[in-house]
Amino acid sequence: MKTFAWTLVFVLLAIGGAIAQTTPEPAILAYTPPMHFVVVRNSTPGCEPTCPEWISAEGHIVAGTPALLKALLKKLGPANCLWR
Image (tube, rainbow, N blue to C red; front, side, top):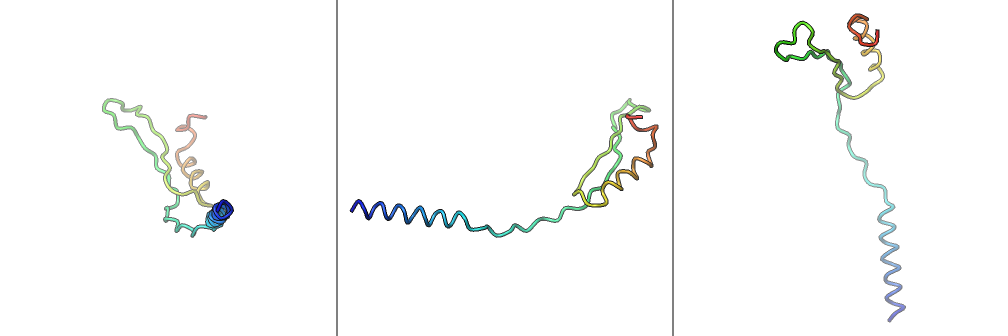
């Protein structure tokens, strides 16, 4: 009887290990739009004309993302950058 119990435990462990090793179905990835950049300005009353501004980025990084950021920074010019 002891041998049967140990054999049963071994078989169940082997089955559990085999099930754990199977590869799961690949998940269908949800579509994420490509990254876009927007200049955002704080709208707190009374901060004009020195309201803080920042660049907001949202979306998935794709091959053209660095070029879009470069174009935005070039459009803003060095006068609007903190690192000048």
